[in-house]
Amino acid sequence: MANNPRREFLKKGLAGICGAAVIPGVLGPRSAQAASAAPSVARNTVPALPGRPLGKTGLTTPLISMGTAEAPTVEFIRQGYDAGITFFFSATYYGHGNNERLVGQALKDLPRDSYVVGTAVTPDGMNARGGTMPKDMKAEAYVKTAEESLKRFGLDHVDMLFMPFAEKREFIIFDPILEAMAALKKQGKIRFAGIATHSGCDVALKAAADAKAYDVVMTSYNHKIENKEAMAEALAYAAKAGLGIFAFKTTAGGGRAKAGDPPFDSNAALKWVLQNPHVSSIISGMSSVEELRKNLALLDDIKLTEPELRSLTLAANRPELDLYCRQCRQCDGQCPAGLDIPTLMRSYMYAYGYRNAAQARATLDDVAISGEPCGTCDRCRVSCASGFDVRGRVRDIARLKAVPMEFLRG
Ligand code: SF4
Ligand code: SF4
Image (tube, rainbow, N blue to C red):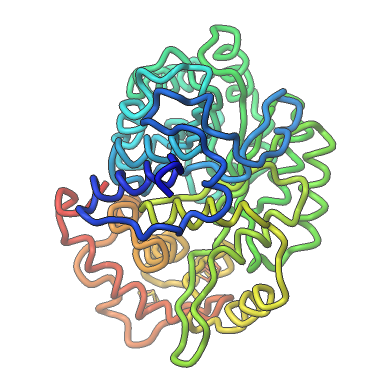
């Protein structure tokens, strides 16, 4: 055990963060391969995690990448790096830019060719609900917004820039964005251009492939999606066009177990995603050494077992316990008070599924609500395709609005 540096490192790291020790033996065979893992100084001695080629980028990405939205500290991100994670993803809308600063701090001083960093930059004026943009948008404006992101990272370039909330074909194959991406590449400020799609993902993937201007895509993809065939086809289409594919929202918001049910197995959900060979890597939002450990252990064997498959089926058949809003927008326009239900349900998922109160609160800030939003309604008119108790969830999550941001982690 004493000669297992990755395990030793993680033991020290957890003690640093939590003042507790990790139980030896939890990392499994993968960690036993490490030769040295002194924090961030002996990178080339940490064995590479299993990976897949990333489209035509020439990169190979580990099967697990770190989504940093929930990363609590600089040290935690460094722990991920020291454990073999090499791809890190942030977004301008995580913590109002603070997350990019956090990631920049974590990566500074590391050899620039030892990690890949990407960020999702929302164009000014974009309506995240539907991914629409002002028709008179200028490429220069998006370049400027991306440059502000670079400043927050403290980097002269990011490897990947994603336009998030991509949904509609006309705003994916959209001249101002394509021109901006081309200019940023030419100036050496980004290496690869991409989109991130949360809703209408099959359409978005095909549009990104047809644009012939993107290198990578990030898509919501999990065992609960209803259009599995359409997504399988779209993923194959995008891969054939040479796009490197990342998947996120892969645990579908986690899950709650009913008394007597086996607990929801997040690793089974991740394995389900990796069964699709076109997915190069999962962007996993990790917030604790425990999750990091669990993710690394998963890589020892990504084959989905029968019991794991059964646990996913069980979770999928319990809509009343579901936390995942699939952003299908079937509820659009149903609330007479005009509430943005998909965004409120997303906030609820962040709070109760991912247990990220800061992200839930930041998402709530995008919705115009105050007081008790359902207060004047005698009954809820919203019929959710997933069967959510919309009124109950709206009333519950709206309470978070009253909590000052500084009391929430972010
Ligand atoms: S119908 Fe339900 S699952 Fe679909 S977007 Fe609305 S709240 Fe989410
Ligand atoms: S109860 Fe709330 S969510 Fe439902 S229709 Fe009324 S205001 Fe809208």
